[in-house]
Image (cartoon, rainbow, N blue to C red; front, side, top):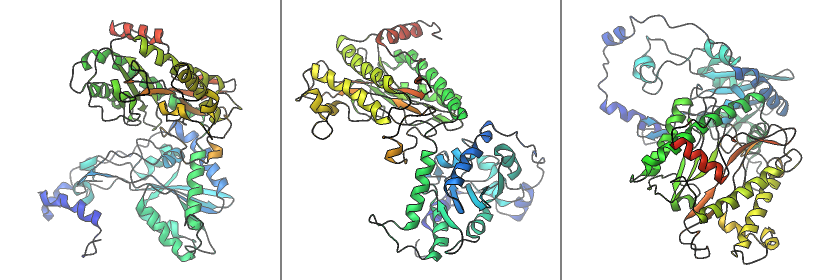
Length: 515
């Protein structure tokens, strides 16, 4: 707030009016609101996702009986002054509604306790009539500015949920809430405005003094439980989710094929890495919703910076380029694949040696990725190979067994500080708020999808690394589905072995279809 009592965000947004030359006369308002064809009343058929979301919501209902559960889609985020980032809904909201790239900002899914279960209602801002000022004057929501929003009836048909106007939300959340009434839970981090509304209603319960050792109130602890459950609900994917991930993988494979063809163009360019980045993102935007995360296009020594997303370096013959990229499809499910490619199509002896070590670690992880094994064991299998190879190269100051001992070792992690796997789905690092016992220490179950991505990274200034290894960074990342019999490599269409990578690159460069 400033001294006038006006929220700073409102002031910021009002600055766009300083340059506006929009007509304001009554004559203009009457004229712009007239002469439009009738709005299309057609409703879409139910989405495929709507067959699966009721089961997901029922799980939430069963976990939090007789409580009101509030799940915001999120809000538009300011990118610069009065311009916003492209909207992307909160993952828990999308998972429980089935809305992906078609989700509207400021929407809120509420599960109202009713009988032994819940009644789900989606609150959002529907399309405004053409005779309203919002239609032509609101640069954030107006139809002339950002396009037409759907009607309540259209969204109801699409997702199979009761819908209501967002203006009805405050009263709906507050109804029967209180110390002797309905308790509220809210997914935090999506909408400060909705959190503030919930907190205002909760304030009447006088429970803010009930704090734990971390200083969290009972309400904050309950909200954390909701976030954990929504994450854990996605640990095992249903058949629709697996299908979406397969679509994302297929599009990502196309992106990698285009990268190989574009490598020749990237060589010699001042920002050759950005040639690679944009070639991939062209596929992502044309086929899907975009990229699932910032693309890593790391050539040469940049591959030793794990999250290199600046992508402003050159691409040189004789170097490797590490590309970590994934297409996010319209449902918001994303692939996550890494391939390390020789820019000129052939690995050098030193590059081959490092690459083969990483591939052996990945294969060891694949061997234990099956039902009944733990998520942690996948990582341990890869680390055993990494430590053994580093020992054979005389880089470890201790025996392999000591290095692998978490209490007194870890020296091998100097050259691979990241984990081997993470769950994958509607988030690239899916289920991240799940409890440790449900994630790292959990047994693998059919339907789980995660990455296997060991690596080795020898920085140019690493005086402990062999000179021939310095500047080499290698990561191989695949997306894995746990099945009843073991696991399936969803990304097997992209070659992994040295000979297959070299042959694949040669075919693509010659113009041959590799599929």
